[in-house]
Length: 304
Image 1 (cartoon, helix red, strand yellow):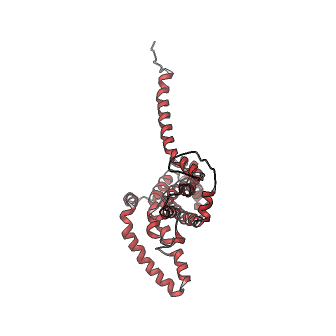
Image 2 (tube, helix red, strand yellow):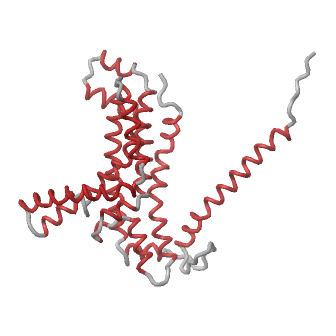
């Protein structure tokens, strides 16, 4: 008879225990800053070091909106990043489907070429990008002033201006996030069987009907994953809003956090922690909503 060597339970569990212990230590190390932000934001006398609050209070959050323009910062960030994310999802969905279903020699070179936008550091693109946007902004401003004047023209340019306006920042943020989103959607559509589309064609569905009733429902996990990555990356961007925005009423949360830090002679850690906690919550909420779609997207999409 052949003897089969069986591993002892103790030996098989030791690597698992070591792995879990290592992951627990790394998780604890990463979680400490978040606990500090949460506890300091609720502490009436917050300090630099992590400590249990002696005086629990919500006054730090009240001051963000009462003493500072916190509500405006939140609106600007959500509007700009939300608009850029929506634009990325639409373009990535259409472009990813076209790249997945197209067979051409230029497809692979094109996919690698657009990744250069993502690979190049934003600081290397700031000067030429600002010059281009400034030229477009001057042309646009002259056209707006032909039909409107004074305060009306300035109000319009705050929305559609390329410099110190919502539109310019939205387009730049969307451009920076689009390459990765295109790759995600192209890979996701590669995993979708063509049978669904062929069945819709056999049933006489038009192109718009196929998109609305077949492709969009099937592509929701991929769109959610692409949108999540675009939202989190754009939400954390500090350099582009700093370069492109100068008006106080257009400031986003990163700029508000930075300038609130610079305005004080003594650092108010409670106020800064409250503002930082407000800043990180939308990204956490977005991840919570899109988490289940991430698993489906990166585990192979929809199987036929």
